[in-house]
Length: 175
Image (cartoon, rainbow, N blue to C red; front, side, top):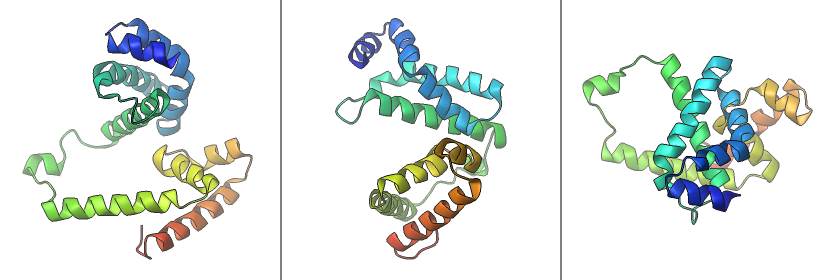
């Protein structure tokens, strides 16, 4: 099915979006609903996800990952953007002042991001899944607990230990 969706979207055929919604609609809603709680915001954001997929499909590269992974990233990033728009003023201080990070700050940011990726890769599969649920998909502790069949306290304990392990893996610096 993915090959057909890719073929249609590459050709600019809107049937590709319809097939994408059929194939990945539940996954997109699950991701967006985990970040945005208001049902109206979820509906608007899901529409935005499909619009972004349509507009940016030219950036999809099958040699870098699956269609599912790409759609997951688009859904997550779109939901986070929707959340930011709801909770931040239209114009930030950085936009008003034209301030941007210095080249040194940008190099340090990239090095820190690479260090975090290495640390996350060193985690066990269960720890990595917990990390992504909480800090990438922004799921609530209650949602994680319910889906894993744990108490919220147990999830909080695992997250506490996970943060400590990441801190050690990253050289002891605070996260």
